[in-house]
Image 1: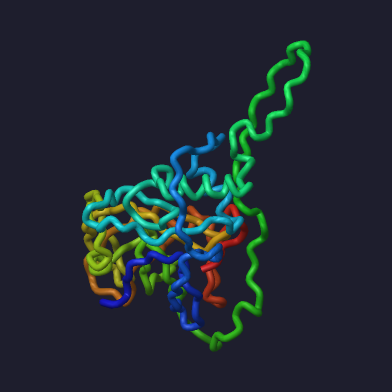
Image 2: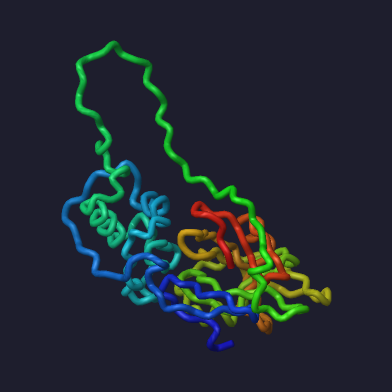
Length: 289
């Protein structure tokens, strides 16, 4: 298990193989343009939304150039903050200066104009009788309502009959973590302490809890606390980032972590052990693990 956790500066969670594992990728651009040097600006166009909102709503278009990982050493970062643009800990998405420059670059190229303040104003007309002001309705992204289905073609390459579990690779706090069990039978999301130690998350706060966990045999397992970490599920544009409360457990396991019912229910996930797949709605469509 010593090689089951790695730092992840790229954005590709890898493809699921048919043995329940995953093959890591090295693509840093999540399907968008290749990484490029993002210019720095001194003046910025006024926006109708925050840069974090612009990024969240427009990411699925594939127009952003994604930066390399944050250069600040991990022990000097604020590991309570997560940047979706860098996909790493250290600052929030809204605080990201690189994202601010990237949004400005796109605006100067004629994109994202709908977020420019005053861009849609019409020429001034002669004065008219005052009309009752209409309430401003902000466009709120909606989760996909596409039906979640599994097809026989998605099971090709699997050996049947099988009793394999659903095992995936995910980005947890910017670290690629392999061998994560998706377990509908678990009432908790679990991170094993050996995995946590290898992730080198400096400054992460662990809250003490008094409850213990019961295993399959009925044995009671005490926890070392609970910690909240961002988890990236799926790939752009069908991607969801969920803050997960992991119970930290110090015991041997063939897995590095367990995603249980709390997270599966929050993301409205549907699992198929026959297909060894997990699907869930996102703002960009149906996400797949």
